[in-house]
Length: 60
Ligand SMILES: [Zn+2]
Image 1 (cartoon, rainbow, N blue to C red):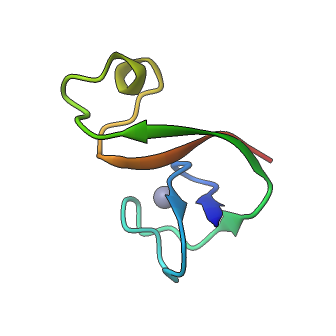
Image 2 (cartoon, rainbow, N blue to C red; image 1 turned 135 degrees about the horizontal axis):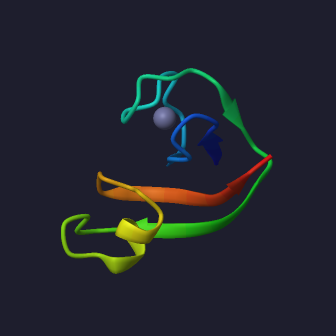
């Protein structure tokens, strides 16, 4: 599992981030936020995450 340095989305094998099209990934991340419904999720709002998916809390 790797996290996008730009938007913090956690992905598996993708070469390009499905959310921001970034290609800068790191395996050094901590914590996970799972956003199922970005519109209604208070966690997502607090973290400024606007698309469903799995996100790292911190990216190194
Ligand atoms: Zn991204």
